[in-house]
Image 1 (tube, rainbow, N blue to C red):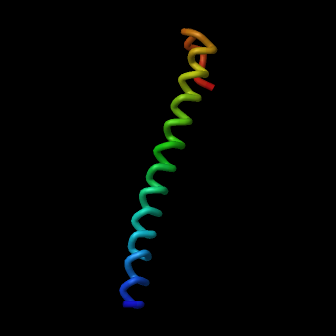
Image 2 (image 1 turned 90 degrees about the horizontal axis):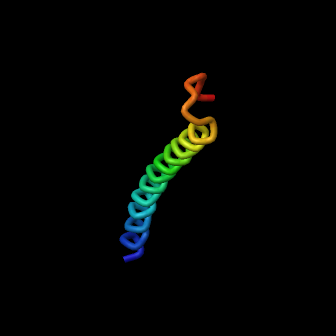
Amino acid sequence: MSHNSKTIPQINFVITNDIKNYLKSKFLALILLTLFLLKLLIKGPKKTGFF
């Protein structure tokens, strides 16, 4: 029983860790995209450069 209760949370932790990393990368990409769009909105339709 003790062996079983040890392995299950470990697998669960690995899965949740993978999901966390995935969501973190998606979240960072979303933040960068919104910042990029905000920059475009602030600058207006001028096509001088993105940054």
